Structure formats: structure tokens, C-alpha cells
Length: 567
Image 1 (cartoon, rainbow, N blue to C red):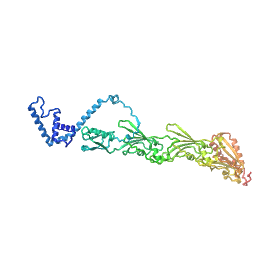
Image 2: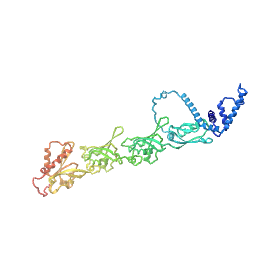
Image 3: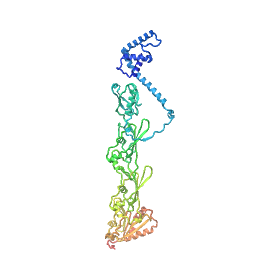
Image 4: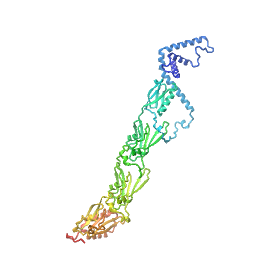
């Protein structure tokens, strides 16, 4: 009985019939014909050598089969065996097809040896819009397989299993992994066409699977992230915490692996739409995509607007400070950190280092920057000319790792260099410190003045009625010569408006007021035979005179308070 029902099911499959289409009696007769063989002669046709008793026996057997086909239990058994016969039949066909494919396939040494290393798959910059829009099916996708009448009863929902297959009635397990909707539709139509006559098949994606993508490069948190189905590229960047402010958003790379294992890539510009206020590119991500955000070279003439990047939510708000080194003729050379949210401009950075010195040459401030490949680029910035001509100081933004070098003014150019204007500018050190020696004060006094102060400003600290200001000496350290240089001025001429006598003071000047004071200190300097090593040694020399200032600069007795020292 089991063999009979199984053969009957095979007949139903082979003839394209289905339950309710043929009569059970006809089904029984067809099954019995299959069991006896397709080449068995019919009842009314006697084969050569067949006797009348043989014919009668065969006719009685046919009548028994017809009675059996009318039995309801037989029909139930046929129905129960139908699904099992379907699966067995499909497996046989599939095995035969696989054997033919293996026989027709040319021999390949790489495939013959399972341990052979396959050749690397190339990465191509593929720009076919249709392929990027296509959705490859994979495990977890929920689809609807729809057949048009008269085969609508075969329509069914399905979920793609972990091995990439779905079970379809009448077809069994069908692999759809990596196929698009159109390709899946064609595969199912071809499979159904083996059992149905011109079936119309549609595949509908009812619920896409959850997607996983990899985000790497210049982002805040590179890694592996789940995203919503059909998400945009910028949504993946936001999931990774945003791009860094130094990222190259003009060349974001999306890589995608095909079903055959090869990799395609596409470059996407996210910066230009942000700068121009246009929609972002409509590139949808698929499960398994890789997004690479490169880091850009911080060139001097970059067309990236760092302030614009800071305001867009696509760029992460970073707290890592910018580290900039400032060297040369500034009040406090050293290593400085600035907030990355607002990158410093060159002139503001000099102010952070307490401004340039009076000896600084602001015509050629040098900025050095190291690129990603280790090479160093340089740019000279002129801050002097705009200050002298009343122009605008160039807005030169600094980047992390920059080195700023302020050169020293050449002594041959001191006369032509307008130090007075620079001294009162915002770039210069706002304050200077001088040391005042006066017999009237009886001590050495360090005094802080505003940068740009002149001799008359320091004389305000001296009691004129007790001082001889017609003889004033200003001692400065000459770094080139390594020694103190003394210049003499008339304080009364300076007070009366003589610009030549009212000299511009410099930081670390030593000012001696009074004829005796100048003579006494000159005598000390003449006896001091060792040269000063640097300006600090020069200042230390005068600071040490503080202990003996009374003996050096005070009168031998209590002096008169009358002002007899005007000329």
C-alpha cells in the first residue's frame, strides 16, 4: 500500500495535477499504471503470446484497483504521502542536476585541492547605481512568495533561514542567499515551472533583516554597529559618535561584498552638501557594508571650513585639546594647549604666549606643520605690514601639532622697523618690566609698565625735587655681543617734549637716574670683567646689587631736599 500511494503521488507531480483537480478514481488508475510500468500494454490490447486467462486476470486486477481508488482511506493515504513524495522527488532531481554540473565543469587545480588558497578578490570602484540600490536577501529577511491564479494556493510567507534557504511547498528547500528580489523571483519561477504550467511568481520583501555595518577611520568610536534597514551613510556615522573634525568628508568610502565574494566600493562626498545646503547623497547601506572615513591632510590652503564642521552634528564634539608649540621672540615661549572647539588663530596664539618681544620680527612669523606621511610644510605669515598700514591681521588658523617660530629682528634693520606701533598692538606683550635705580629712592625697584611706555612714564616714579634727572642712563643687554650696552638721555629734555630724548622703553631695561648713580654703576660695570652669558645673567647681576645698593648709590650723608639739579 505504501508503494502504491507513493507512486500515485509521483504521478500527480509529473502530470501537473493537484488535489481536487483529478478524480480519485483516475488517480488510482494512473498510479497503478505507473506501478506496472509505462510500457505495459493496455487491457484491451493483448501482447504477443498472451493467453486469454492472463487477460482475464489483468482485467480483474484493474477492477480491484478501481474499487480501491474509491475507498476514502486510500485518498487520505495518498494525501499523506504527497508531501513525502514531493521532497524525495525534488532531491532526486537536485542530485542529478548537481552531478551534471560537476561533470560539465572544467577541472581546476585550485578547486580540486580544498586546502589551496584562493586568489585575492579585487576591490573595484564600482558605480553602477542599480547594483547599489539592489537589496540582496539574507538570513532573517521575511518575504512573501505570491503565485497568481490558478496556483494561488501555493502562495506563502517565508523567512530566510540561517543557511540562506527557505522551504517552499512543492519545491522544498530553495537557496535565496545573496539574491536580489528580481533574481529570487526568477529562481522560483524556474523551479515552479518544472511542475506548473507558466506560473506567475512574485517575491515581496515584507520585513528586511536587521543590518550590521563596520565603521572605521576618523570617527569618534570606530567599530561594528547595528543599524536600521536601508539606513543612510550619515546615519551610520552618527551611530559611531560622529566623524572627527580632521576627517575627509569629501571622500567617505563604502565597501560592499558581492555574492561571489568580490568587493565593490564607492566614494561619497558628504562635505559639499553640508557647505552648500543641499541634500545628502541617497546611498542606502546594506548588511555587511564597511564605511571608511579617511583623515585629511591639514594643508595650509585647505577649503574645509573648520567652524562649519564644528557646528554640524555629523562631526563629533571632541574635548581633546590642540597642542601647539610657540618659540622665538615671545615673552613666554613654550608648549600650549588650546580648546579644539575653537581653534586658535596665529595672532591669538602669540597673545597666549604673552605676546611678542620688542626684538621680534613679525614680518616673517614661521608656521611649521607635519603631515600624515611625516613630511613638514612651512608657511611664513606677515603680521607686521597690516599693523603698520592699518590693515587687518590675517586670520590664520592653527592645527594640532603646529610649531610657531617668531624670528628675532636683525640689528641692521632696527632703525627701519617701527617698534613703537608694534609695542602698542594687541600682538605684543601688553606689559614690560624695568628696573629703576635712583639715589632718591635708595633702592633698586622693579617696575611694571604698559608696553609702549616711554622714559617720561618711568620718571613719574621718581621724586624730581630730590633727583638729578638731567643725567639718565638706560642699560640694555645686547645678546649679539653678550654684554651690557649703555645709552644716556636727558630727562628734562624728555619732559619738555624732545622725542629724541623721550625714548621708547623695552622689557628688562635698567634705568639709572642721577649723575652719581650713573658714575657709580659705570664703575662697577668696568670692574666686572666676565661677560654676561645671557639676559638672565644680566638681570641677576643687577638683582644682586640690591643688597649693596645703599653703599653704591646713597650719598655719604643726609642730602638736602632742595631741587638744585635741574641742569
